[in-house]
Image (cartoon, rainbow, N blue to C red; front, side, top):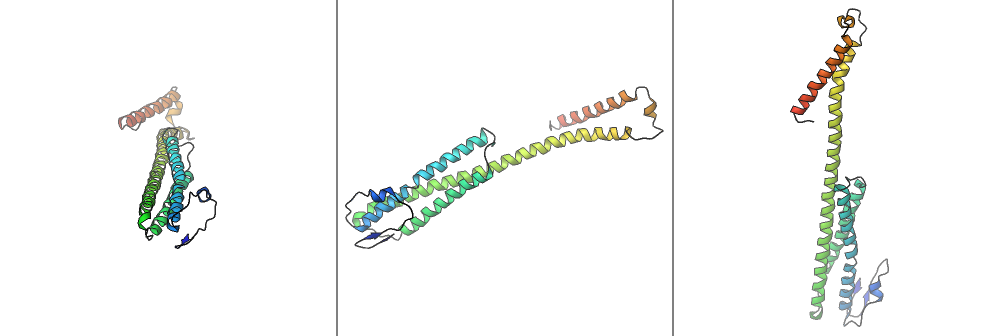
Length: 209
């Protein structure tokens, strides 16, 4: 945007309705500039609300539906979009600090500064919520992985011991006294049950199960 005491020139890639429907006449180009900046800042309100809604939806999916439909990429994009919008507003804020308004336009300039602060705070909140949600998502997934590993470890303790007993009695040695016992089969089964019961009792006592 370029302006002097006589005219205003704007360069933009997209069409903005508030430019075509600018309510005039304006007392001077500075008033028009403040009008354009104020309405340009207002265009960030809808994206901020949309990002906040997507954050709320992601929180619902994470805590209610156990993150079944959430991806790490989705949360990263939410945080990135909020950060980019906040950066754009901060650049605008830095540019507006160098604008010196005429006495008649100081109130409008202050409104622009207030709008910038409000929008920046909105995107900062969204970015912070997205970052917290991202950390929570990683923590939940890590906890789920730990639960799976814990369950597999418990099963392996049981079957490792039973496999050891089976391996001993599966050896083809001629002089194994248990092979000649009439109740050798029941003895081996009973030993397995007793070992499993001891392991189960130990897990219960240690509050692992």
